[in-house]
Length: 375
Ligand code: NCD
Ligand code: ZN
Ligand code: ZN
Ligand code: ZN
Image (cartoon, rainbow, N blue to C red; front, side):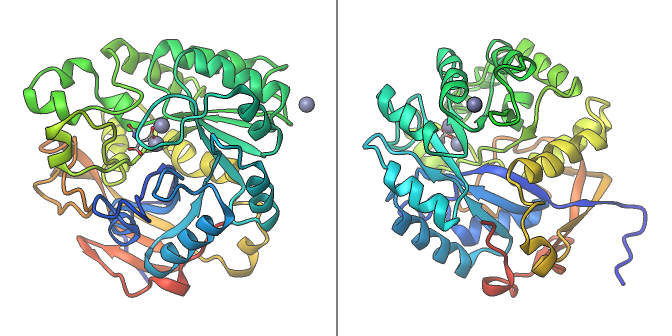
């Protein structure tokens, strides 16, 4: 029996968009530190992106990554396979058949990593041989991705949409029943940083000018407002963090794209609900229900066979200061929200029926085989 008093009990957060940096870039993050950060903040499942070293663009590399996460992660996990500029369609076919990933991530603009695909023929082949394709696509690349999905694809998930202009493109596609069909669905992801941060905050201090850099870049306050409105109209499918840790030394030395996010996403959203910007129901939809549906977690047979409860307990009234009243678990050791006063904090995380986090303490004795790999 767990007595949660007057706290909020909700399903664990599923973060569709994280970069856990293992293998190859583990001085920034690894599956141990990244999953501890998740456990602390209420994320019971993360999906990891393929821009590691080596890139997750062969079945062999994917299986190696799966093994590493299986040994280290204290929460459930899954992977997005990577589409390669060198045409790895044969590997995509193998992976989708083998089932160790069901989704393919492609990069259509320059960002951190070496995975940009510019060749239209390669893009067509990737869409033509995948199920759901997640895209890093900005501005006119969003139009292109929507077209590719319509003509060749079987599903499009537009990552980290930063602005009114770009989100309007995706909303229009979602509302168009020739572009958004059962066979070619279109999904929209928004990150916490594009909701809570903007160029004004970035330009306010020399430090922020360096730290608050990511792709897509922060936009205006009016874009924050449009994103919130769209969320409240039900036009956005998920909140994904785009957890992309880099060391603070790297960030201050030269412009480096990406910021950590898993440790603050839920608390920021609960705080926003206290400020009447969003309902708790909408938070649950965007951070738990929709990710589960889009990643088809709910449909997997394993759900009945071997999955236990992924539940979190949130104190919606707890007031705390980020980075002061908590310990940063991410290996990068910093957060863009340092010193932010928030109301609302995760107090307990239950993964597969086991408590992995309770009142400031992480229980990491349940790593390895008790954690589920999500095919
Ligand atoms: C991400 C990273 O660092 O891996 N960086 C970023 O600025 N968002 C890559 C990405 O998601 O584009
Ligand atoms: Zn990206
Ligand atoms: Zn069709
Ligand atoms: Zn990303």
